Structure formats: C-alpha cells, structure tokens
Image (cartoon, rainbow, N blue to C red; front, side):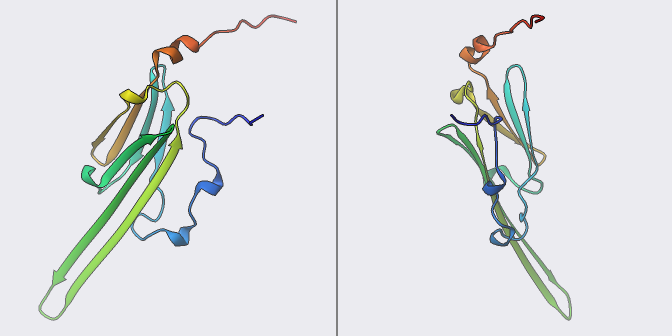
Length: 136
C-alpha cells in the first residue's frame, strides 16, 4: 500500500544541493499552486526572463518547467573597462494529479510571471461525490 501524497508533492530530496546550481538563478523560482473547481493553476515568478527562454513540458503525468537566463553588461570609461556576465538556469517538476485534461494544459507569460492552467477532465468533475456524515 502506498502512502497518500498531496498533489504536486515534492520531498526535500528532490532539491538539488546549492553548490550544484549556477549563479543568478541559484534558488528555485517562487511557485504558487492553487486548485479551483475547474482545475489547477501554477504561477511561477520569473523576473527579468523572456518567454523564449522558458520551456514547459508535460509527459507521464509530470509537468516540467525549465528556464535559463543570461545577462551581460559592459561599461567603458576613460580609465577602465568593466564587463560582467551572469548565467543561471532552473528546472522544476511536479507530479500532476489524476483527472487533469492533458490536451487542454496552457501556459502564458506576462510581466515576469508564468501561469500554467490545467483544467480538470469531465470525468474528474463527475467523480466528486458528497458523503453525508451521520451521527453515531
């Protein structure tokens, strides 16, 4: 028998050690997960990133969000030249609960926030059953 886990469960062992990550995106981005009557919504804060550098994939009941960011800056004055480059990447994966209509998963990106919507299937809506609690 398998222990029950909440949807999108991640254990502490899923996190990569801090010394294996790269500089500017060293920590995983902030993620909010919400369940509504119609489905699930994941929002990910990705300030300074562009949509072309973000990848969202769904396979085998796992949603994976990956991204990378590269910044370059140069400053040249009379007596010095400064050039800096930073690079960072992240990857987050979430087990998607049963009842999500995989064909209708959508992702949008606006003002540094990625929103992934995962509607529940018609069968998932039918599966809900209210159980009356009786006095003993």
